Amino acid sequence: MDESSIYKKLYESFKPSILEIENESHLHNNHPQSPKSGNSHFSIVIKSSFFNGLSRVESQRKIYNVLEQELKNGLHALRIKVLD
Image (cartoon, rainbow, N blue to C red; front, top):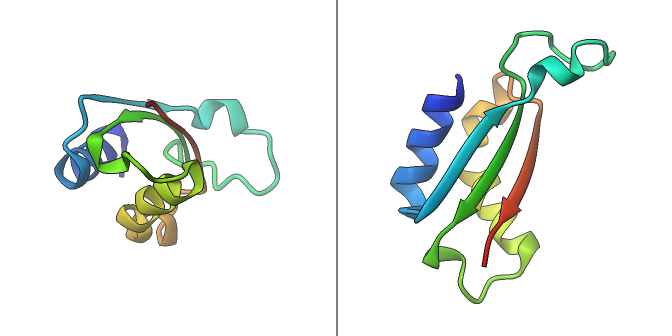
């Protein structure tokens, strides 16, 4: 799992007009809970009509559902910004 696999899953699910994925794992290397895999912490900026009418939390839940397998297999944290 890396930026490209996360990008692909989110793009296929939400067809966003804006999608940016940034690996922020290096910022968390010294945290005790960090798996230190190099692919554990990501920032996501996304804009999609799929999220129209949803609350911020509902939108984030949809993203977490799409990335469920990754969260079970090493993805430790997401920072998500859903654009209007």
